[in-house]
Structure formats: structure tokens, C-alpha cells
Image (cartoon, rainbow, N blue to C red; front, side, top):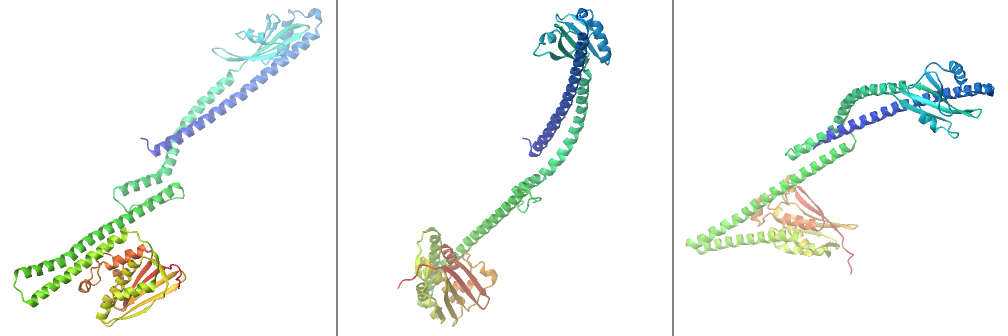
Amino acid sequence: MMKFFWKIYFSFTVLLLLTFGAFGTFMIQLTFEKSWQRVLAEAERENRMFQLSFEMNLTALDEVYRSDGVIPVTAGSIIQNLSDGGSAFMIYNGDQELLYENRHPGFSSDLLRSSLSDEMPCGYQRLKTEDATYLLFACRSVVGGKSYYLENVRDISEIYQEREAYYDWYTMIMLVLAAVIAVLVFLVTHMLTRSIAALSHAARRFAEGDYEVRAPETGGDEIAELAEDFNNMADTILEKMDELTLQAKKQEDFTASFAHELKTPLTSIIGYADMLRTVECSQEEQFEAVNYIFHQGKRLESLSFKLLELIVSDKQDYSFRPVSMRALVREAVRLTRVRREKKKLRLVTDVPDTLINGEPDLLISVFTNLMDNAGKATDEGGELRIRGRQYQNRCLLCIMDDGCGMEQAEISRITEAFYMVDKSRARKEGGAGLGMTLCSRILRLHNVRWRIFSISKKGTVVAMQFENGEEKRE
């Protein structure tokens, strides 16, 4: 299949050659037509003068002397005054009998004379011989009731030879012009398709795996726009590939973390169970082993519930309705009371009784997880604060602690499954690293804008912005 470069090259070359060829042919033909019209006008003028002189001289003679015998003498004197030596003149009578000729042209014009009449007294004819081309101009004249045919013949080969010379000359010009056009069109086509070739090269390299290659965006034409679109597409594909790579890595980390989270308690459960089965233990040792098996089983139960919540959160269709933010916070406070009291944490709440749109159980789960995390991060005797503010059609809720805080790098990973800032403390507290992942999905499901602000060893603030629900009715 022909490449685009050669399509443009041959198209432009043929188009330009045809244009110049047609224009040159038209100009040569136009020049020839002007020469022909000039020769025809001269032949007609010469014939008219011949006719006028013939009629005047013949009319001046007495009728007695107007015989066919006097025609040659009269015509000879007229021709001597008119002719420049290049034309042949003939006179015929009404019966088309030749009465006079100053030079025999070598052919006859019976057909032309037969076509003349009172309605068309004059006419012309082009005649070609082996050596030349002639123009025959004839006219019918009536003097004293008698008809005469006056003809003049001139050689017009020169204008045909001139036309042929022009064609020969133009053919040579066209050959030179074709070579020049071929070179110029090649250079212009190369310049026009250079951007396309660069774009094609970039596309091939991108397809071969060089994802950093980009097409040059030179100029402001459609090809530059196409190159820009290609580069944008390449950037988008690269971003998607990075996202897929990150997603695959997260999936791999999730699998590894999940396997580890299962392995640790299962190993302990199997070990203590085997000890109870094979070794004689004291009652205190048996109680310690059973207690450890119980706690590890509860940890596995919590892990399975968290995983189930993660799966269900994206699968179910929830119906949102206006709910009281104060009531949701109050319920979350009640559910986390035992852990706070165990660590003697102080709690300060300041939440307006405004309505927000959402699914109550899911939002309670979010608030409970966030308060539980805040309690885990805070040392014994610390303080937790929950504050809410109303802003037109938005409501801001912040859960704050003065605990250990986090580094900035940890904040960006806190919502990853099984990611724990302090793994030893999280496992000691019974966490599995799924709470923040679940919170992130639930808040995204509610179209809630939220951010985490944290300073290491200073504390953490989780800020959430909810849409208001309908006005609360008393």
C-alpha cells in the first residue's frame, strides 16, 4: 500500500504538471487563434479591395466592352497595384469558368464557389497540401447583371509552423519544469509530512513499550493538535497504567497482609490447642491457654466482620435520608465508652442538632471507628474532642485527639487495607488495619469531603464536610 508521503508527492506533482500543461496549451492555442484571426482579416480585406477595384474598373467600361476577354487585362492592372507578390488571385465567370489567374495555386475551390449566394456572398476555406496550408477567400460579385467569382489565396503555413515551434519549445520547458517541480514538491511534501512521520515514530515506540516517548508539538496546525492529543492520550494511559500497577501492588499487599493477619492468630490457636491436647497443664495454665485462644478467635471474628463490611459497602444500594448528626455522634460515644473509661480518657463534644443526608448505620460505623482510633492513639488520661459547625448548606464535623499523631507519609497510606501506623500497638489493641479503609469507602459513598491533619507526637484531626438534610421539624 502506498504511503501517505508518496500519495501527497505524486498528487501534487501530477496536479502541478497538468495545470502548467493545460495553461501552456491554452496560451499557445490562444496565440494561434489570434494569428489565424489576423490572417483571416487580412485575406478578407485583400479580397474586398480586389472586389471593389474590379467592380469600379468594370463599371467604368462601356457595356459594349464588358466581355470576358477584357477581364484578364482589367484584373492584371488591379493585381499589379494590390498584390505584394504573396497571394494568388483568380476570377471566374458565373459558369465557374476560369477567366484570370496570376498564379496557379495547385488546387481548385469549386465547392466554395458553389456555396456562395446573394445571402452569403463571401466565404473562406482552409486547404492543406503535402507541403503547405492555404487560406482561400472567395466572394461573389455582380456587375452589369453578370456574376463573377473573385478569389485570393495566400500561404498560411507560417502560423501553423509557429504553433508547432511553440509546442516543441513548451515541451522542452515542461521537461525542465517537471524536474524542478519533482524536486520542489519532494521537499515541500517532506516538510509537510515530517510531523506525521515523527508522530508515527512516537506511536510505534509507545506501542513497543517506550511509554516516556512523546510526539513533537511544532506549529499550530491540525497535525500539531493531533500530536498534542496523542501526548495527552499517552499521559492518560501512563497514569492509568500507574494506577493499575499501584492497584495490583495494593492487591498483592492486601493478600499478603490478610494471610499474615490470619496466620498469626491461627498459629497461636493451633499451638495452644495442641498444648492442651498433648500436655498435662495446671488449671492456671489451662485457663491462660483457653483465654488466649478466646481472644485470638475474637480477633479473627472481628477481622471477618470488617472484611464483610468492606465487601458489602460497595455492593449494596443504600437509601439516604436526613438524620441528626448529634444523635449519630451520641450513639458512637456510647459504643466507645468502655474503651475510653478503661484508659480514663476525657471527652468534649460540641455538635449542633443539624440534619445530614446519609445512612445511619454506616455513619455510626464511621464515627465509631474514628473515635476508636483516636482513643487507641491517645495515652491514658488524654483528651478527645468532637466539634461540629454549621455553614449554610454544609456541616463540618471534626474528631480530634492529642495522641501520638502521624508523619505526612503515613497519612497518605492510612486508608490502605491492613496498613497500621504502629503495628504492635494496633495488634495489642485488637486492630486489623481495616477500619480506616472502611471509613474511606463509606464517606466516598456519601460524597463527603474529608481530610486528615496530623502532627507527630501532637495529635490528629479528622475533618468531614457533610451536605445538610431537610430542616428539622419540632
